[in-house]
Image (cartoon, rainbow, N blue to C red; front, top):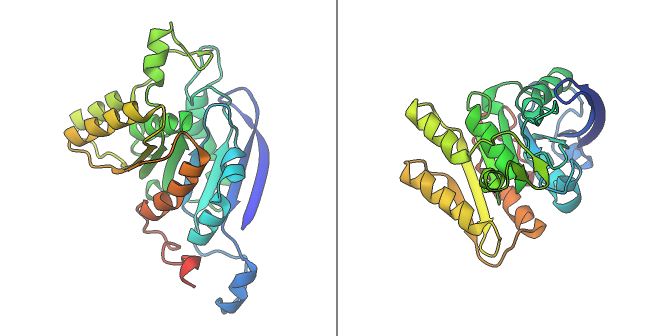
Length: 264
């Protein structure tokens, strides 16, 4: 596994940002199973763009879960960035975080690293605030993402902002996109929705809102993978439990899909 941290100037937000990339690579175990040890690759890697939650940054997925091992075993790349507490939305005065995730981040990563730029190889996932971000990005641009992973998503954020003069999580936002409205828009145009993985712990303070969103999807004829798990709150133990299930669920037809190291 290669873990790469880099800093680049973002034209979407107007200053440099830090990102981290995990690439599958040789490990000491490969000497027993690969006839030729090499760093050359025959195909670009599929990729998941992971979005952090409120109060977190691009390092938290790696610090609090076993994501590095999970993606290495499944031979899929992972990308992480920090947006502060800005909910992956364009801000009122120039910090365009939605534009960063929607276009600039994939453009930078897929140009400079051996990562696929094909829709069928690109996924977006997030937890809490990042789960909301994953849903709005995947549903707003279904032509860019094959699947969405929404871990305890804060689908109530637009309502919070509406009830507090545009303020949510201590920041002022322009009108925020609602995940349910984006679903309606896609269904109205008969567009194909990305596959959706949705999970929530029964003791999570967001449980009722996520359950309501799930029921709306089912009523509309959309069948997400839905894990509603007793005994868990809004916590890393739950997200680490669900993460391998999401990784095994995502639809994959890439060259690395059958090279799972857990089967070696």
